Length: 290
Image (cartoon, rainbow, N blue to C red; front, side, top):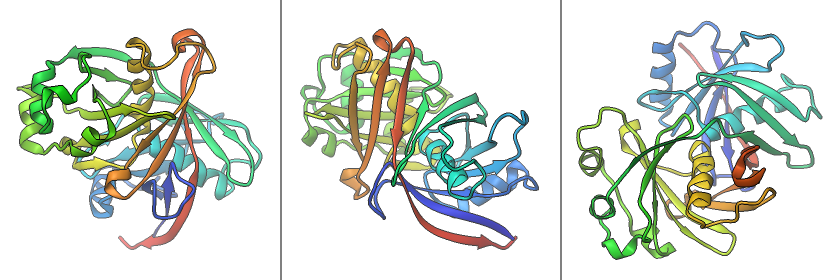
């Protein structure tokens, strides 16, 4: 019997945010079984807790979409951290600990309170290919005028993501991307990636993320891409670059799973880190019989 928890991440309201299944003790499972379980759960991601390789760390975590294993993912990292705290596997009141993920050690910080805010530091961000605005507009079913006059670009902090800035929230809601359009956008490239569209708001951005190559038509909240979003926005002057700058990315609203991802910039232009944080709500507990 495998015990698991289901939590909603990046929300303070049940049945909003991004749902996550966390399997408590996966030490006896191989990756083939983990992938099958993730496909069975059919959530954007499923996380599996294992003993850490370094005893100083809290846990080792493996993360799977219905289709593939991830090097790093934000909402599973935040959600698993909450479960570790909630289950007493990390000491209550602990303000910081480390999770081991495929990408390497991921540092977690906790703002304790009635509803703890859990933060992660985005792994190093690599810049990638720049895309034609017209190609991106066509793939999204939009007019080129719906895009800001900024070159869409692929950035990677463990989860390759193409960022496309749009003119307003209505354009974000009109965007769509299916497997064929994704294939056209990749244009022969082997490596899959996510597509993140956003428009500026008074609090930060209004956003959506599509990942059909991962078996995720649309993701309600994408923590692994939100740090890269901040780097893209800093690069193009869409947000301030001074240390202490904060904003909120509202994602998932159009699909009925409103999520609020908090972002803070440390150091000039994020040189001391880009942090992504949010709240978590416990939803369900279960047992899987295998």
